[in-house]
Image 1: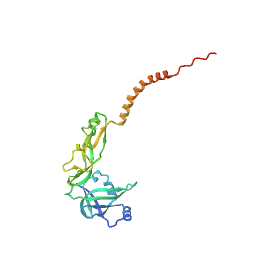
Image 2: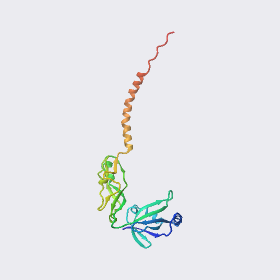
Image 3: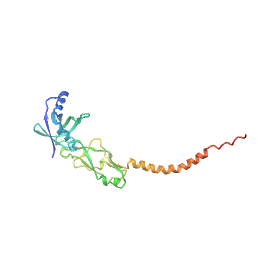
Image 4: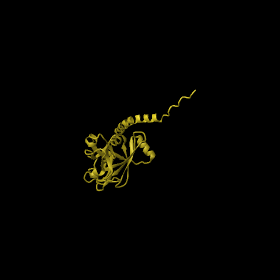
Length: 226
């Protein structure tokens, strides 16, 4: 079921009008694509909590605009520099027959049973957290799973390893060989191992250094005759 959001057409525009709108707890926005752009405003609190839902960012939304529903995608939004306040929001109308490009979140599974973690003591590092894909609106997934069950220490999962849903293709700047996640030895463990190796070497080198220092010490001068 599509996530629903209600909006109202606004007739005023400009910085001053937007400022007055925000004071009434409304967020100015725009809906564009497949026709003329429409200026809108949305209840701030409803929108603020909707933005905290991951699916709101990567799903076809059902917008009720003045009582008429239309399919839209969230395309952009601006937050206040230091307040928890949405300043502006952009939506794009969706044409069911045209492919769309959309960033979809990646959900990583089975990290705890990956050989590199369970047996090698490594930690998973996420190189990518989302993937730009291309598909028809009806095929848009809310997220894409990345299975880490076979990931070994020092190895990576690549874009080409991700199983994409039917009708979905990788888009944009991604390449098949791009790493998505890796499993590496924690830096602390590497430093600890280096310390363990260095300690015996330092202990063994100490007597040799003392002997060398003794050899280098100048001989005592004979006492002067009276």
